[in-house]
Image (cartoon, rainbow, N blue to C red; front, top):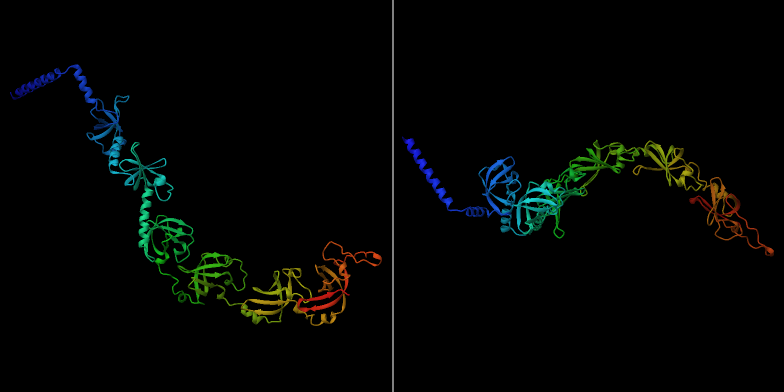
Length: 563
């Protein structure tokens, strides 16, 4: 009975609704309905922003209803968070076209967001303002930064220093300065460099105003060079020179620091006029050279590791930051060393003796030969002045020859001690390398490691006995011309004894001598006006001469032509 009453009530309601609809429709003509439809779509203009509702999500497309006769499709990637898109959500969309080929209207979520963002940016931002945004991607000539809308950051404006790969900024949130707004093209250009430069100027001024020498500050390694490291102290770069990085040896700054490393350093010097700051790293630790004389007294034996070898010696690390030099001359008493590598190698542990210490220059001189007895001290005991020795010619120089007396001990035979009578100008003319010769010890100097030898001293000095008696001044002698000079001739009086014929005054014979010139000297005119046939005297000719002077110290006899 109840159900029947309900059905009757529902039937009455349906009849009432149908009658009401028919009444409404009856009030409109066909033309009126057309006009009503046109009014319902007249607000759907291309380029406008519409309110929409998500009806469905099909694959990578979102179906949106904006109240038009057909729906629109929007690619899912236009939504900032595609995973959070839900059916029924209301969104703002940009109407790009009323209908495409498929009969759907063309909508854009990203363009609507851009327009909203542009309107907001224009209201709140102007040129010169600082904005913050996330670097989204790399494009030709620079980067796109999202500050609510994509803005352009030129590569040249990305940093105060040139960045090799600006792509490393992608994903970072950065601050920039707005340098240009183009309202017609809806374009904004920003500069990170300009902002950083302004910040650095402010920081630099503050740093130079407040910084003090001796203060410890923090910085970041910005550049590594062969001579040192540049540290960014926040607005100003300080130089950490390689010599101020470590108390010990540093071959290259990269051994101690890396790029972008945070580091504490001490301010050593501030030049406010040139805006320069010198920094130190080793100064953060105690100076190992303090009281160095107490640590390494002269004559004490010390051990260390060879860390560097140069042509003049080897450096020994005695302790961290403390190095000493073994000069090549301090490696052996007797061995002839041409390079330190003949005695030591890098990494060798060697024992040495401290020779000298210079705290001011931070230098320690070391010796290896001092560990052994000096053989030169025995030379004076073993060899006496005036004693005869036999040795081998080890080397020949322009001033003499070195004779090996025993292994490691050489004596010098000077050119002036080779002959009493023959003037030797080139030792190699009378002595050959490797020759075994006898000599007399003339002097010994153990301190300077020198032994002087003589060969002529093996025989009596003829200038003291024979020559003064045989070649008295005024005596007439004969000899053979062996060489012509510009002012005279060298005459061999006997083997290994020479005289010098002076031709400074004109004489009949002088007019017939030649002095290495190809010209023939003409003779004087004879009786009857006839010219005497000129003669040419040359090397090899025998001449009669007069002894004019004896010069024993020069091993020379001065000769003149007869009057």
